[in-house]
Image (tube, rainbow, N blue to C red):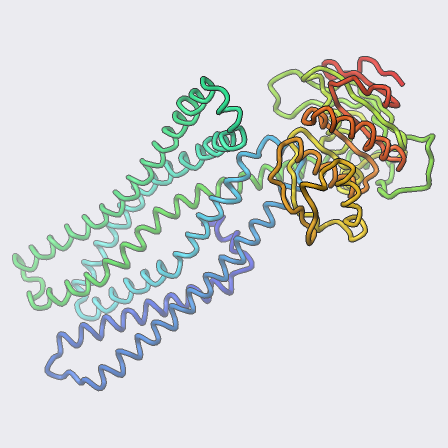
Length: 551
């Protein structure tokens, strides 16, 4: 619950309003029950006028208090879920790309399912608080009517609490296992959705994916889900059994020892029946808490992981700053074609927690303004890793990266990355262009015609009219987006692999010359060597090293 209270930070006043109004709702509910009970037991002195005024006043008060608790809890949910989404999203975007890249399947369920579970828990808070207040109110009324029966009832509730405490631990255990295995299911469903073409074109792979991967993991996850639900339901039913057994014991005590009269027991039974609904609400809430704790663990785990990385980054930044060099100011300076725009010096890189031995080794590379660099090499040679280092998505383990002769510090990464327009093999096409200026958007028609997409797509109100396109067309639309942004450096990772011969020709004979004319640095990865003559420099990667280069 401490984690939940931390999430509610900043909403304590609204939480107080919710709890206070819920308690008032429970109090008014108790007074209504008391009035109903009094009308049944005091028929001789019953005053209809007094009853009507008092009874319906309590109902009105009950309605106002319950409405106040509902409004305040809705506001808490709105603020808390919004805050969580924004904070976690910022953490994801501020964490090192390499780490987040390996956590994609964990991030989505946290930002969707886990937040929804928490919202559902918070929504139930008023009814639970009202239930507790109602039960306590009736219990106090019982003590006033008969201290002996009040004490016996309190003892029964104590037994119910002990039963809950023991059984709820099993609910929590299976809730945690269920939630942890949900990450595996999300990853498999993601593969099903985004890899549907591959699956449908390979019968054996499709069958194995569904029958072995998805089915087997779903069975495991649903096993934990089943046990969580069963023990949660069992916990609720066990509470009912305890209360029914308690009533049986009371009946025996009434007839064997006459602890109270049968007439009073009828009154007592009426009050107990009024308590069963609120008790059931509270009992069900306890099981829900364990499911929410599992979600909170995932949220905190994600936050802690990203925070640990941020701390590590801060430490690295201090050690770099310790060289005595000032942090760069990443702004364009006077034209100087002789000095490098970007330089990598003795850079080494290895993936964190990687089981294989792959690493980039002893990378030395200079990129001057207007240069066109082509990177060649086989699969797994390090081409994509190299461009992610160049554009700042990855940070080197050793070695240095310079921008305009100034050492790149971690504090400057956002500004440095903003110099690049990059299309990776798995880049996502956004239809929203609202971050572009009016002048940039005015270039859209020119670039759409350049890549021959003007007959398919246009821009209206800062949004592409459609992105329901083939993969090749999406890549061309991404190219239009990049060209409008007018960055200093353009990186294309296997961009031409998605294009037909005509589109490749447009890229090499129109787009690259256009970028060269504007003085942009172009880095292109491609297996097609037909247009090698367009490169100012070609490097070949093998096993994480630059084996040779030619200009």
